[in-house]
Image 1 (cartoon, rainbow, N blue to C red):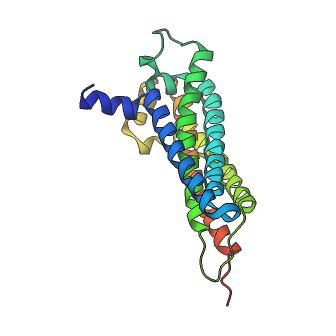
Image 2: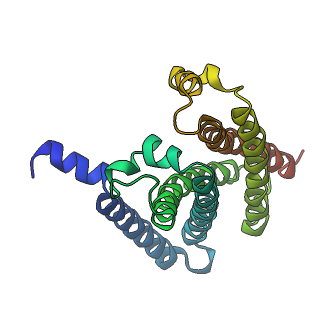
Length: 221
């Protein structure tokens, strides 16, 4: 396997993704076991990794659910916009069930990555600091859960904006699609807006979560 093929396999294929996940999980498991052996009941690493796992699962569920819904709104967005036409039989429209499963797979990858990132940010914000109490993982989980309603709200708002043609300024390709009328542009751009809103809402929700952590950890004077 030459360098270009290795890079493509490692970063662009489902098998490479599975290998990266397995290696990462193995490293985290080893670090958690070492920490537990050294510190016993006071060990914290395994708790942090468990929280990251929960954060990843939350992101995966959100991503899968989001793409299950949006693939029914615009199959064109996934078939042409996400390149599924290169991975599925050349028929239009494609089989709805097969397309939905493929779309959910895309959502799982994106949602899981975003979930880990959000979880890591919250853990860093909750790091031990002199004079500040550390939130429990139950409190952190509650704060994490509140990120997703904001993502949903922004998805609904930007999805409606996309359907109304208010997002054409974000991309020349979208503007051309709107003018040509190909691929049911209102549906296509509505789904684009929903996905964009999920990321925007995730950023806003995470910022609010950080403020909540900061307020819940007042300095002891």
